[in-house]
Image 1 (spheres, rainbow, N blue to C red):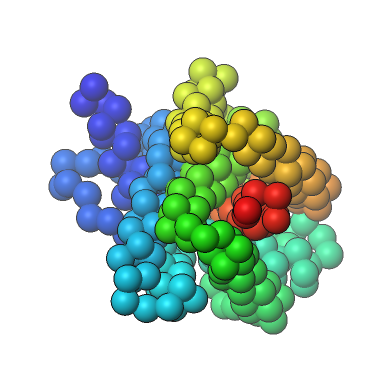
Image 2 (spheres, helix red, strand yellow):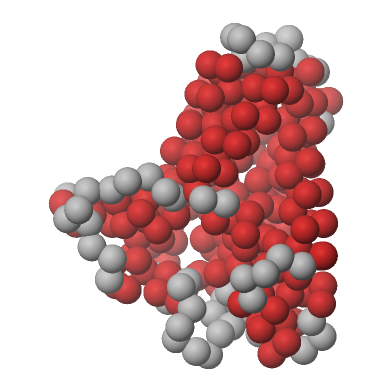
Length: 263
């Protein structure tokens, strides 16, 4: 039990800015094994964003509460995945060889492609969430669980890369290298089960099994990005995982913003 607690806190330390106990280790083995708790980090980020939205919506209009909830989620993770998405936009937008793409993604500077992509995806998050609240008489009842489900499922989608694909960088100096070692099937099953729990809870709560259809566009996103990354760089990097999480999160919001589910 202590081992699992240590793995959870290791994941919390790596994927967020939340302070962790001093006794939590940070070895490569712990980082690799802790990836099964990546979806649980999504639970926490979604809960924090949902609570901020819920609390502020009593004092501010819907759009302001939503924007501040987004700020809270970014502060909690240190824009970890947003940074990866921006790097992927810069790398694949400006590079034409695997080596050049990887070099650009490693550059800490933000380029035109990254700035444009980051601005657009943040705007898309905001407006899709706003549409969910605007089209539903019970905005609190809809937005809060959607935030939790989106943050959990998007990280689960990214997690599958570590099982199905190879890490693209040959060098060992990448900060994501320790989490990129292959997952065993049993570890993937645990991670995916943890990631699906919020969605299953929402299905039971709303008594709407059609919500499970959100898994289809997520599968398509994973399949497309996997093929795209494999074609250009022969695998994935930590930035690719961050980009996958961001795109998958938006896809979940788009799914729940469909009129069929908003009414």
